Amino acid sequence: MSFSISGCPLAGCIIALLLPAAAGVAHDRDDIVRHLQGAYGLTNHSACLRSVPHPASEVGIDPQTGQLLLPAQTIAQTGSGVMRFSRDGRVRFSGRASELDLNGIDAGDVPNIPGLTLTCSGTHTVQQGKLVLLASCTVVAPQIGASFTVPNVEAEGPISDDGSSIELTARAHVQNIQLSLPDGSSLSSERVCTQRWSLVKLP
Amino acid sequence: MFFKRNGYGYFGRLAITAFAVAGMASAQDFTASEAVQASRHSKPKLFQADYGFRTSNNCVRAIPHPPSLVGIDPDTRTLLLPGEVVSQGGGGVMHFFKDGRLTVDATASEVNLSQVVPGAFPQTDGLVGTCRGSYTLSSGNRVALHFNCHVDIPSQGVSFDLGPTNAEGFISENGVAVNLNQTDDLQTVTLKLPNGATLVSERVCVQSFALTRISSNSKGTYSKASTDED
Image 1 (cartoon, rainbow over the protein chains, first blue to last red):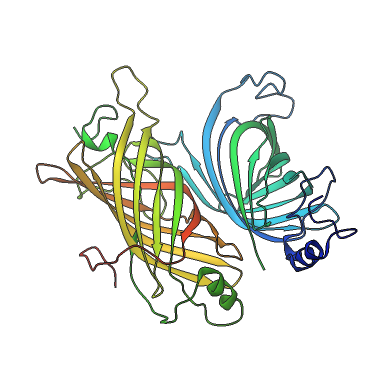
Image 2: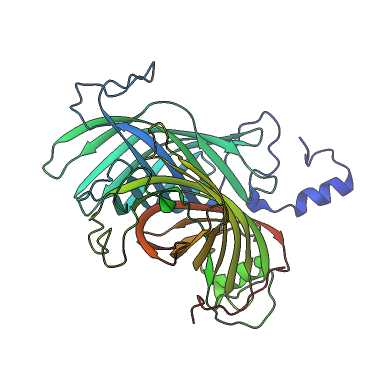
């Protein structure tokens, strides 16, 4: 533990006391599991391949092999907002997002879906300078009256030494999507993505 | 042939990136972190610094067409002409000036994801972009950029203008890191061919920028150009 208060030399104690408490996690280079506290500005960029929506009784992507079992489409998304970490291990996010349907390239298609609202909640841990995030996210598309939930978002990545920035990437796994339609019905879909989240510490 | 999805000449192998300016003013010389601190409780202050950055995007764009046609409806975002998918990446330096102006020097490359048949040339590299624009800071460490770009592709002897690029995001408390995403704007690419002809293409993109401060005193220069905004 680099900056242990107990038993430290005087100079080390002074340095430890002067370190910004807001960083919250800056010195976690040991095996102790800790939590962040505070707000971070977040931007993300994703590219996904997702199966076409289907009844819950079907499977679009095999969760074990990753094989596509139904037709799929390619999408790209960006989002931004504020992620708030609590010392009890909770995490919440609220922001907005845009989606681009990369298959929508024929005349008459509308490939861009702007104005999505995005909320997430979940848990986090910090160990050895790395943040691990497990969350459930809901995306609402007001213009089409639909929403979808991704219950198993998993990401991890390094925290800067001073705690001012974090870079996360999604763990490679099949994400499940529950789609709620305006008529009250629901459909399922699965997706595999490359996703990156960049966070900077806010006051 | 303008509407041929594969092998239609210059523009199908173009990439796009870039950045540009307009000014405002706050004469005090703030560092980025001081500016962030000041923006919390009072009128946002601006700063002077250089940031190295990387950017990547995914776009659907209408194939190049004469300016008399419209490729994407600006209101409904419906494609009115065939489109294609491109992915671009690049980086460079963004120069922030204390009067609110911004310039960008960037290089980029592109992969045309619609060019998947034998004989196609899906990759274009060596794009050199210069951009001018402006930036603002607001409460909550929020940053907004606006710029327009001119991009040269020396290997093909063509160039294009791109804009607007509007991006919003956050600057860290210490001013070292900035993360931004492009907002939901329809962008227009105006292509200048070697024979003097002009083609136009509209595009919708998702794009992210990641910036790291490399100098607290901007080394960039800003000169008034015809593409500047007032």
